[in-house]
Amino acid sequence: MEKKFNIHEELKKVDRHAWEDHCRIIDTYAAEQITNFLRILNKTGGVIAGGFVRYLVHGFNFPDDIDIWSFDEYQFNDIHNELVSSGMELINSNDRTNVYKFGWKYSKSHGSLPCLVQLIRPVDGVRAAEELMDTFDLTICKAFLTAEGDVFVHPLMEEHHREYKLVVEQCRMPLSTIKRIIKYSGKGWNVSTDELVKVMDAWGTLNAEQKQEAIKKTSSQIYNLIAV
Image (cartoon, rainbow, N blue to C red):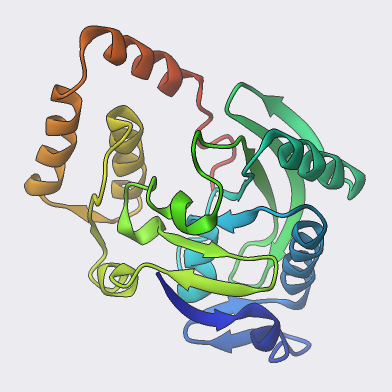
């Protein structure tokens, strides 16, 4: 992973209308929300990772949600308490995530826009952001924002973003990867046959019990609760 920039330094560029740098366009309200998230993570630990961090880097495809990852159950509970205390509404919960709704505003044409926050339970054996990135499937999602405000990205993320290309680097949960490929394809991203074969090969390595468990887990996940 490569360090891209520090968000605190970038936020100094925010003016009354918008912050524009490296294709990012975020208004001052959104900047305040980022600062609030980092204030929470400074108390609790954890990281923001995935599509929202890619948005901070590139400014395209505002994500359906903001994903906060915890590294143990105590941290998960602490982050939950902080989110609720900050006024976010818990609207759904399952054995993998808590989902919260809060108001988000950004100046790219949508005006006021509701957005979701997903607080994701710890992944077994993962205790640090770099380890978490090893569990992500698509290179364009391998990005995280630390409590200190540092943004780290996969070395090939920007290249694949320019080409609007989906590349599967690992595939621990083939059905989840397929759903994510479908979601991104609907937003104009391209996927080659070779990448789809990777997912099929990963599915083929599972036994019948593992496949049933994968179906059960994937069915419990929450996708696109609010269309953007």
